[in-house]
Length: 407
Length: 219
Image (cartoon, rainbow over the protein chains, first blue to last red):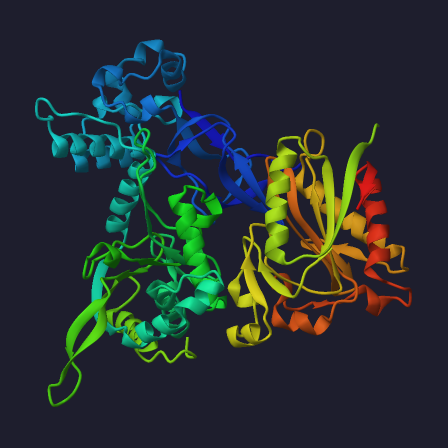
């Protein structure tokens, strides 16, 4: 039975609250007492725990909206309610039915439920070809909501994609981490207008510096990797082209410029030996990366990478990223076309850094140089190619003209 | 009414991020009932912090100036807009469980203001509230700022009162996003000796009065 979550009364004289953050989205599981959202009122920011455990089936108030105390801000259902698509289960429990139809219990038959479908729900159902009588309602009094229709359509589409498994196949549940990665990837593809631009970057100067000073840095406890130099070049390039570090909010009607560069570094983590838990990709974040030099960046990258692989990251380590670097080059890929980490607007992909023959002179002289392809994936809703390329040109020149001081 | 126990901890100078993680840890311990209600008192090195509803435009100094002066800008999860912390400013971070009888956020904020008003009164300064502008004011000038976070009714963050703060540093920001009012410090308003230690003593006393606490220990 779905539970309505209301804007709590946070004080006698407090009549309304502004939601400043949702800790959970529609479809997320939430435990009882787990922080669900944050409310801001008169210099106080309050974390509101979920009144029940279940799955968030509806979020009715967007971040930034102010609503009166006791208004419904979200609905939490049980997992069965959210995903049930079996028509036999579609009748809401009778107690709810009574609420819908009031005193006249004779009307509480399923054909009459059409009378409670909102125009929006009916329109959506038509668009997606959903038979509403087959949808389980999770709204007030068992009403079918917009989310119910969309979930139903999605579940059905899923059925079409997967079809029936081949006889003899093995079926396993997806780990929670894998599920959330899957969801995020599809969401990002749907949200951003992905475009990619590829730059060929010479790392010879960096390579020389690295060889020369690797041991000095090692004494300071830092591993001098190419990634540290790339991170620093990115931070400096963002200072020149801040839009790369921005975010789109409110359905793409507002642009947000974060106060600092928080650099996400994608890390592949191993699948657990026991069970099938937690293997996958995680993006820990170097906070305030613009205030860090190469040495500090190296340390942060190493620290976050180690803790990610050891599964010792805390929630704060993976939040508030403003730009992401992914490095499939270490696996041999020469360049990639990465998916943006929402709500960011750009992501840098580092290809294999390797010796290549390069024409270095007008007369056609060919030399062996250390090179790599860097790809920027960017959201064309906000960023035009010229801006993306200006940023990339900056990253390239920062790296190629590195002289030990400039970064 | 029986009074509850309050532990006052004086932490000296502590960088903002360190104080923040300490608070996060203590909030969890308070939620689990492993520590009593606490009042942390400390000073921060120069730093600018942004509240949840902060407008980055209220940081007036350029990135370059901030970088040159070594002043970092931190996003925090307290309520409120932008503020500045630095030497000569007394910071109070109460980690209190407001349950069961103090579950009223406005009352909590008004109580913090009351503590600050009574404290400066000990030094012969009459401060007041301005309706709609949380904080403590002397005339049109802000003496203390308040910004609070509450998780499961356990408080963190708190207040910052300027004692001997270098007021020039406030030109780096538009405090709390309010442009038509100024800032002041206790030292500007009284001829009394206003060392941070004396103010902290007085503050701890008024804090336990207003919140009906019995102070258990001081370190």
